[in-house]
Image (cartoon, rainbow, N blue to C red; front, side, top):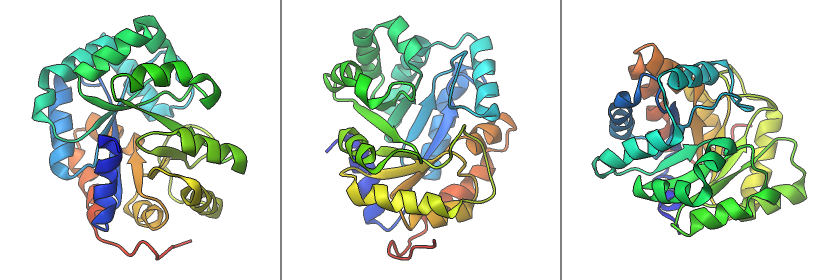
Amino acid sequence: MSRLQHQIEVRVSRGETAFIPYIMAGDGGLSALRERLQFLEQAGATAVELGIPFSDPVADGPVIQEAGLRALAAGTTLRGVLEEVASFKEELSIPLVIMTYYNPVVQLELTTFAQLAEAAGIAGVIVPDVPLEESEELKAALNDVSIDLIQLVSLTSPAERIGRIAEASQGFVYAVTVNGITGTRQSLPDEVFTHLKALKAVSPVPVMAGFGVSLPEHIEQLGAVVDGVIVGSYVVDAFQKGAEDTILPLIGQALARKDRLAVNK
């Protein structure tokens, strides 16, 4: 079992909901990265997803797109992020997950990317524009240095494909809860819970739900069905506004013990 999967399963075994916040690396400058990661770790995050800015994102909503543009304007690169994290990795104990599009990885070169990620202590990688059928080369490079390649499952994936994606995923499987881009929202439709329960039934690794999760009640509802949640736009916006304390109620809800059999939908 990988370090990332173990960390999630430890939280679940305590009756908690695993909580992975997303931040855009380089938003506010790379010098802000250490402090933000330490804040999230001390607040109780299970792991942190580090977004790499990219000029042509396909899955990011306006909040994350704008954060990416700010990070690019500050000169942030994939290599720069990994080298910065490597400089203070010993100060962190929670796993870090890189979320990047494939173009920056190809520009860096697969082996170099994997080696830099290993040096930075990265536990997992998400590349949303690499489908399962085209992921073997990337997966091999990452697995050579014991880094998980995390797969995404969409709401529209048929049952047979859901099973194959879940089987191939490492660390956890990322369950996308909207048909579209990231962003905050007020409610979760019923079909999301049907989808998540079907995925959870076949997944050999923990299931983390993300896209649109932004309220404590979302975490309560999702935590009754899957292993944890990923919160992006809300966290990115909070840091941008200097209101990071507003993230604490979300983490507090995730840390609250629950009856995992009590399904809300």
